[in-house]
Image (cartoon, rainbow, N blue to C red):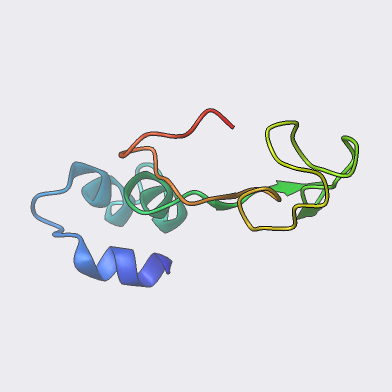
Length: 84
């Protein structure tokens, strides 16, 4: 996914991509999180546990095993994050 985002971004128009290619700041992972999606969030190297009454967050129903309820963030920093 990171390579696809890096291929689609214009190196002449995107200042973040210029910093990454110059090795001064950031990485392709940061570019992907800003432009595309944050992806799966980890706690201790694993998916978010269902420790809160059989769910990861109180915003989701019990025993919900969908990607979003277990820590996958589909939105990006550019588009804005949802509260949960």
